[in-house]
Amino acid sequence: MLKDSNPLKACYQLGVVSKAEKGEDGVVRRIFVKYKNIDADTDLKKVKFHETERSVQNVSVLVPVDWSQEDIEVEVMKGLRK
Image 1 (cartoon, rainbow, N blue to C red):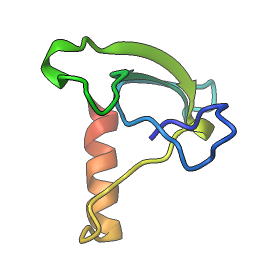
Image 2 (cartoon, helix red, strand yellow):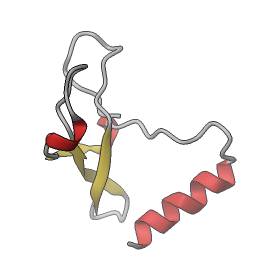
Image 3 (cartoon, rainbow, N blue to C red):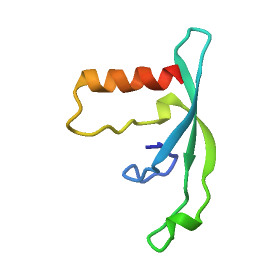
């Protein structure tokens, strides 16, 4: 989910991280996210992805509720190896 400057804090956009960049300290600091601008009447197949660059502080990661902490760490490490 992408945190936006929207004053309605309950509003977030869903996106997919397409690239992560590490800082000089080796920790991921910036990401590139693909997302679609849609509303209730939009046909998702007809809308193209947009891409934006964000600081990791403005992103919330969603994971399935039944994942353990170990599952999350394994998936994060897989993503960092790409």
